[in-house]
Amino acid sequence: MKSFYRGTTPLLRFDYPFEYADLTALTISFAQDGKTLLTIGMGDSEIDTIEDYGVSVLLTQTETNLFKHNFPVQTQVKLKTSDGEVWVGDIETYQVHRILDKNIM
Image (cartoon, rainbow, N blue to C red; front, side, top):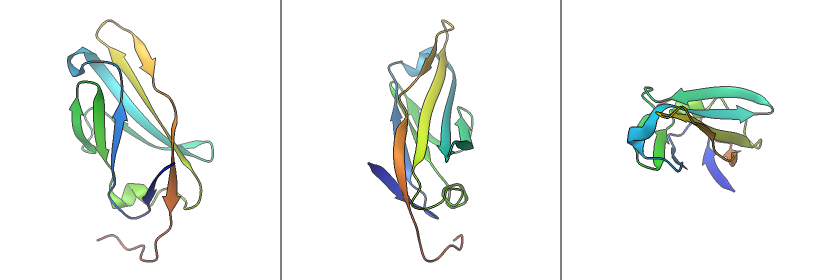
């Protein structure tokens, strides 16, 4: 299982079967304990790299602190193509590890 620590800035990669030029919308949802806590979209600053067949997202310390440690976080990509096709990726699960220093640097 993939993982990250609370209070850090992990770079997460999500893949999809489309070229970037074909995308008109893209969101990545982060849920924990059945509740969506964070949604990142195409124009958001957390998008580090968006390219053909994949996107990289750089979470902030504040965002990773949203998640409880020792509870899995589920993520899922949803996108829409210029042809109007809506595609949803498989749910990916990340383990969140606790940290001692919760201060934002």
